[in-house]
Image (cartoon, rainbow, N blue to C red; front, side):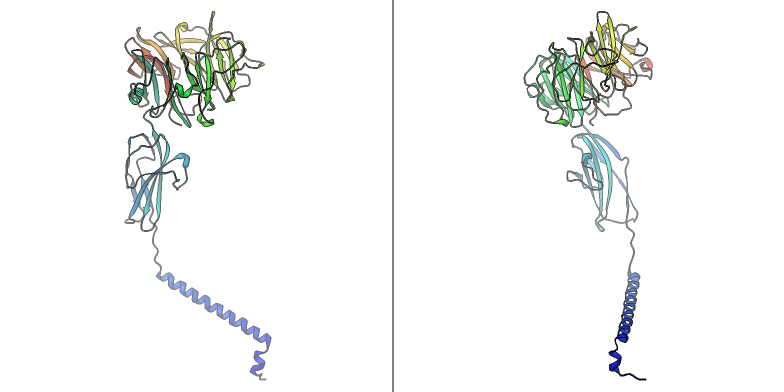
Length: 505
């Protein structure tokens, strides 16, 4: 049976079927065309290997003194030889501004040469040195990062306070054994007036300073370049008569303290606010105080001084400017408020202990105090079997084992706390007098780690002609290795005191 065209195209079911069929045919044809096009494109595409650059250097960690030249000659290995040409850039930025493979806005460009050959005039600090190689044809960058430590000229070592012709002279023995005699005068002129009394370093976090005391005043210098940046007028509200001055800061780095002639003064550290001038003299209990020039500080928010006037320990809290007595503590080894003896020495001992050497008319005594404990009065004992302790002028303890060294005339003894006895470990010539001795060790408030800590005793002497500094290396038992010094440095005046300058941290 035949049907007319009119009927055919006006039959809706049939029309829908035909439209669906035509749509499917169209999709198949379109897909075929696309696949053919891709196939043809594949035949025309050329794959290229991406060049990768391997940067080889003699080291990845560099330490340099300020104003010295840093040379780095990298060797470049290409995975695709003949790539490039390249551009180069050496940039440096503080570790405080670290960003992975991305230079912070505070970065400094040192060079745009392939090899680095540059005098480093950066401020002493820890840096990242980034080497960037750019393939100018592809735009691909290769990064290599190094660690760079820039030390000041006086980056670590021993300050030596001495007097020559009645005038203060501060010298420095650097860690690499280079000696700088009277560098403060050389760099600042004759700024130190009067007789030298003491020198103390304070290098931690934002603070890098050296405090020098004479009988005429106090002077503050930058620890990296020894440039003067403060004197008595800048630091104190009024001048003082300077006797037995002592400087330190607490172990939590919030307050700086100066003890002068038995009086305590303080200001904040840069980490905790505007430093400003030192406070007025600390107030204290109604019967007064005469602070021994030493501070005891632990992880608690208080610090401890000893009052030689009333023979007791006193405490002060963070940002407080008052000395207070202790409360009653149950089970304490002794009464903090009634020790009854005169303190003659103090030092940081093993662990979190602090040691104090006391005396009265009956003899000498060892006291231990642990400021991190709720009951800080740890132990005490009369010192026995200790020759010449009545002649001792300087003490220094180990922070590893329970031993205290003391210098008496020309002899060095070590007091074994557990054995409660002392033995001779070194003797200088008869005409040589020990002026000071210090254990090479970490400061109570410092976080520096060094394998040589507590293995060397540094002794300052005077023989009537010149001051000398000796390094006495110590065995595990506390004796002097080979019974002799490992180094002697002379050329100083009549030495008064020595002080360790730790590296910047």
